[in-house]
Length: 122
Image 1 (tube, rainbow, N blue to C red):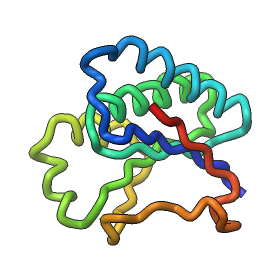
Image 2 (image 1 turned 60 degrees about the horizontal axis):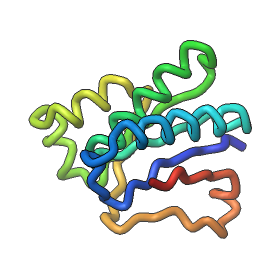
Image 3 (image 1 turned 30 degrees about the vertical axis):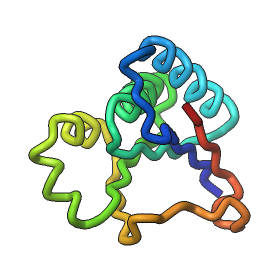
Image 4 (image 1 turned 180 degrees about the horizontal axis):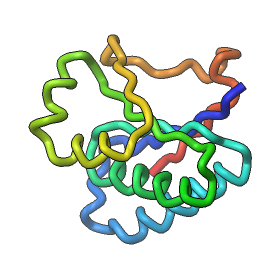
């Protein structure tokens, strides 16, 4: 079973302390890799997602078996990728793209399919 790690930012504003967020994200991604997580899923919310994607991309140099996937909230958001520099920057780092059809999609942590999921909360 593939162990998956997601970043949850709860739509916070990182501009106040972006360096602390960067240190925390890099640390947590490193811990996840050391714990055997190989699939990292990033959203398209903003600064924290870019930091997360860059952290995974940096670590991939030492651990080429890990993957980074971008999760698009809905098919309507696909057209926004070309228009938004944040989406483009993240998209270009990713190995895969998934589109969630339900806007309120959240994996059920009690489901066996999601038994090996870790969330990094900011």
